[in-house]
Image (cartoon, rainbow, N blue to C red):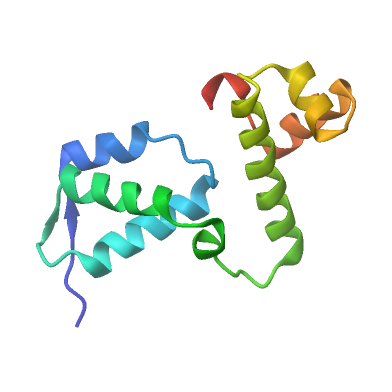
Length: 121
């Protein structure tokens, strides 16, 4: 029998405010891991923060969740790669596009298609 877990308000606030670079799949993964790994009935902000810290420190290979869908995996890789390029170039679209070897207009198109808002990264 699986024990039901509750997230306290501070834990929920922390998860809501976190910038989820891996979108909803990453959030789902963190919530599932918290529910499995935490022994207490209530999941605290401290437990959630620790899980987020662990996740950020893992190499990319360990954070990848195999979904069986190559198209989704490719989109996720591209999303993460573009986000890192934007961060490296201080959110400057022109410099990030040059770094990525694509036209600025093409990068804008990819940002829209992948749901990336440079101001929120």
